Length: 60
Ligand SMILES: [Zn+2]
Image: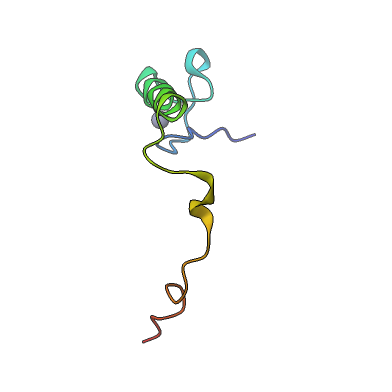
């Protein structure tokens, strides 16, 4: 099995910090998680509506 750090995608994963390669990456993930849990900046659910004409305009 190959374990990859989800943060930096290094193939080495430390037992202590599984599934991360190091404490640093574990911290990064943790702070992301915390931020995501505490405050998602101004994104209500109905923001997912389609924006007309923004998708298929670039075709060079
Ligand atoms: Zn990492």
